[in-house]
Image 1 (cartoon, rainbow, N blue to C red):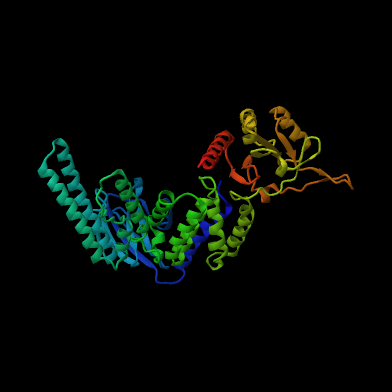
Image 2 (cartoon, rainbow, N blue to C red):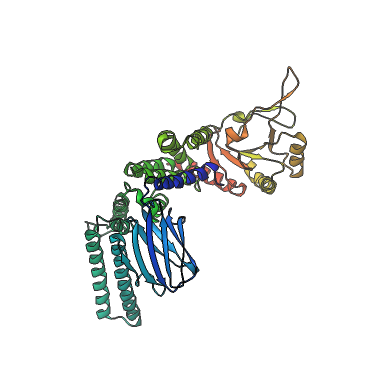
Length: 483
């Protein structure tokens, strides 16, 4: 489920980009002519990650393919795309705010001619050269497939070597251009040859470990995280996802450590805000159990700890989320939950004798809860033989609905609780449990799995995964005890 604050953050970040427009009145004027389109509309948009674009201008195309993007406020610099009918598009670099281009829909890149922009001249020359080399390589590979030929293989190696050299020469010649930064940021770090001989399986394993460690240590070498223009490219998001999904151990401490490492390099305001946002949003409702501790780290250090980067409402929301989530992290003891059973007796969860306790928080009228209840009853038949207790807590404080749910799904064997407590002096009903703020119940059902000491070891598991999780945890514990 998407958080409201995540939407606000996205609007805040894109809003910051829009603020840059107000900093100058120089404006922009970009003339285009594209053979193959006429009497239509084209769009100019900058990238915001690889899967979002922010439209900055539209232009009408005349009968000869001419159009003009024009505005009286300067565009934020970065990589833009010109979107054409039928899903066609091409990228341009916005640095210089006044230039012209001409191309043909037959081949938008190869036919491109630029006037008045050194950035785009270099950018398209690189693409054109690489396109020619790609076609040459493709033809040679097709020839090679017809029959192994040492001559063809030699030609392939020659093209590969010359392409590598071309890229190096081009990057050196254009290192002061944003085009150079763009191309460099898309390249992987070069891993040096492993310096030791491979004589055993252990040597091979050591080589792979060396390659991984080198690759990870140099992963950000080609990306300038001090340049705000990188936020308006598809490369920053791809790099962040690759680094945190594939190269980072998915436990909170490791994620937090790598986030600190990246953010030590991301010193420009826009890039820093974007990086903080992307990492934080990934781990607030994580796909991998227990990694929400990384979100708490990000929120405390980079939102609450750097309030000047954000508006006051964002910082306030982060403080609220931390206050809710921090007591519920894996390894923490379950906060006090005040429940009474069907006879009005207080349920003391910390004193429930069980190796594991499953806490099932539900709403009797919730459709997902009603789907989960039969599965829970079925799972309990096996769980109870393994010294596992199940506490089913209703967030609805209507006794009739609560008892009706228990009866309908035959949950009498469970420890059924509701937050209704009679005041001995007044005889009135009182409520003590704040399910939303103390147990992060924003949708039902919610499941917590507790160990013998009532520490949280899992949360938000689907009912059908509870038994497998407990079996896995039990085996891990037994394995540690043997060692």
